[in-house]
Image 1 (cartoon, rainbow, N blue to C red):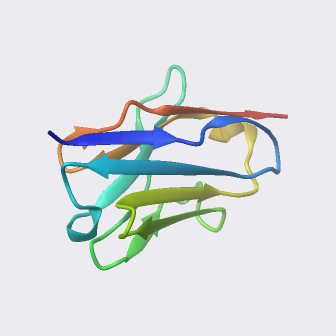
Image 2: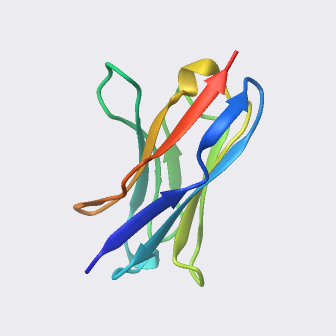
Image 3: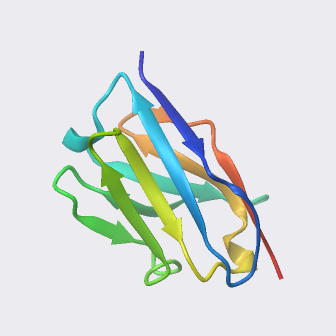
Length: 111
């Protein structure tokens, strides 16, 4: 049974940083593409970025230069490092791999 579990969300002031984690069981992140999405209230879920099996990363324009996706193959965990956070980054953040989704973790950025 595949399970993705996100953690690391919370409340942070604008300009601060958070690191989200997505730990997988039942599948290996190192052979697939893993993505981070987010959904703010009243908005559609949007792609934040992804990391491929070979470590290639790509990001939405809105987070480029501020967010970094990385992977620890030994821990089978993907990370989303978020720096220079803005109030508009407030959302529930989800990890996605193939057809599987995590439960989401709330990120709130205060101004």
